[in-house]
Length: 418
Image (cartoon, rainbow, N blue to C red; front, side, top):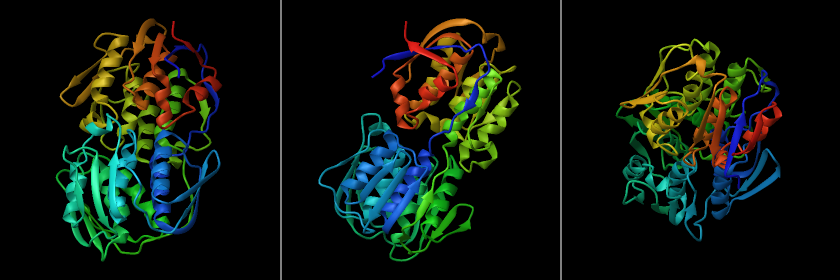
């Protein structure tokens, strides 16, 4: 394990070719859908990281055969049913795996415990548990966070289920992906305010459709899922848009040209919306609504530190219940570089912006809170400011194990902390 790395600002534009890893969001959806489909599915362009490894391991615990013929492929062979595992499903701090499997294991005949690490046990899951109970599923979570215990009977009910998706769109995606195993059509309806990231539900529906599900939009807040089950298929996974944002920002900060192998416009994931604001740098707007591209907000916040004018990020309250409280973390760590460079204003993040930061040496040891996105985004500051040290750099393995190698390949010097 590497305790810390210090970034030496390159004195040249970053140029070269870096292919981002496959999308974590799509990989974990495809792994689950392939596991629920009878037959053999081949997933190509997939992400191999801590989060996807935890999902694959949990599916193997439930009797699914998953081969890994190369660095970007999974071959999933399934009977179309999940078996009761011999012990709890331990999923670390992988939010997609925990939320998706909490609903999916309702299809198991037997008892399943879905659990995670200490950080995961602080992340809310109550709305999803409540929705499962509405479908007649015996699910419990005494703390409103993992662990969740599900006593499944192999069925997923039918009718209408209401879900508060304001904390996480993953609750909605979890219900949708299990719903094709209903005893009849299931309507998944939103309550409360709109989704934090509706685009991720669109990703879910697209993946479900590829595996043979029939999903229709009844109205703006309701989806109807027919009881079709899934059909094994070959499925190509696009590169990760969240990972791409770091490379787009590195390009913008250094005046470089980085070939990602995929144009900005080709991404379908919500975080690709960040490209529009990155293109505006150093004249990003005064207010950016991050509600529909939440994983890209850390990237944009660091870029905003070098913007010509201050930037306020709104619609980001849900960042407080990610791998860490990202609103607080961004304010704290940017302000290690220069006092009050960023502050919390309610649930908004206000980045003061100072183009004169570029070229300075401002030694700062950046805490990463075991959060991959804090590590990768704050590292961008080190492309223009000397003395930036990233603690626990290995945490990027959650979604982008090759991140530091990618920066090195572009000519960025990364050394041990001084």
